[in-house]
Image 1 (cartoon, rainbow, N blue to C red):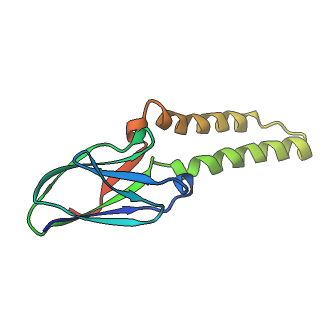
Image 2 (cartoon, helix red, strand yellow; image 1 turned 60 degrees about the vertical axis):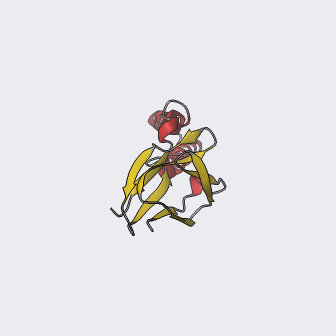
Image 3 (cartoon, rainbow, N blue to C red; image 1 turned 45 degrees about the vertical axis):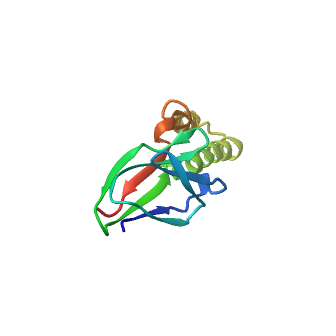
Length: 138
C-alpha cells in the first residue's frame, strides 16, 4: 500500500499554529510544529494541500503506484523566518545609532518597511502560497 509522509519543519513564525492537512479535499490530520504525519493511501492520483486559517499551500496532484512511498516537507513561505529578525534588527540599529551616536540611518527604516511588506503579500494576495509543500523523494 502506498504511503505519504508529511514532515513539518520547525519554525518560529508559525510555531504556535496547527496546520490542517487535506487529501482529496478531506481533512486527514493536523500537523504541529516539527511533527510528521504518515498516511496509507490507495494507488492512483491524489490531491494534497495544507491549510492554516484562510491561507494554504499550492494544491499538488501526486500519483502513487503500489507500495510507493513519497515524502513531502511542509514549511511557511520562503524566507518567512528571516523577515521578523530583519525588521527588529534594523529598527534596533536605527534607534541605537540615533540615541547614542546622533546618526540617523533612515535607509534602515525603509528596509524595515520593505521587509514588513513581504509577509503582508503572503497574508493577502499570495495567501494560496503562504505554506510550501515540497517533494523530498519521488
